[in-house]
Image 1 (spheres, helix red, strand yellow):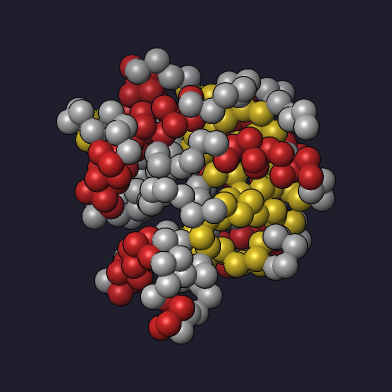
Image 2 (cartoon, one colour):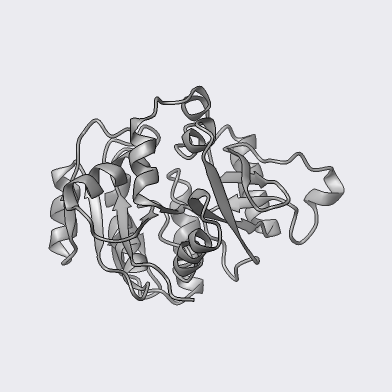
Length: 269
């Protein structure tokens, strides 16, 4: 199958409510050297073959300076962008017609599996009615426990996704969904799908999204993708087999140690 052209946008903002300055947080690799979160996310994006371009989309000069300092490309976006999808839409409005598909690799997800980008682009070809495609991966027991521990401590951790029988998303939540009986929760791979911070959009879907009002569920959950579901747009989920590593996002300061341990285990400098 010939894939349509795609570009990668990494939305990044400094003024995160839960973790201000997060894109510039240093993360130590296996060689003991530290790189900022935004640099590690950039390197993850650059490992994807075939992209027409990679840009960090931000409204903050500190992030811009960091990205330009390591040789990356930046597109400055409006401060009013409320989330990464709005920032991608604004970036594309400024950059112009850069690709047939726009991929959002979130700036707090440096452990994202780069290989899935092609799967997301392919999914939009296979499902022409879907506005957007995004991955879900079956939780390992350790990921499930990490999410459950966050919930028990009152921290907002990762996002889960539940789907219908055709692989379309029914709902995304920062709670652990679905509810599991204790026996199911103790399985090596509990039947919970962790949503990974990657999206592939059609450019027209981004324009539609940006023109729509913010939904109540989007506000309550703090999950931008719920706006697509609220306005009746289909979201296709690419189901991944359990990864050989825990794809933890940097949501809280306590995640730094976990991510650094995974970088060491995977031999990532």
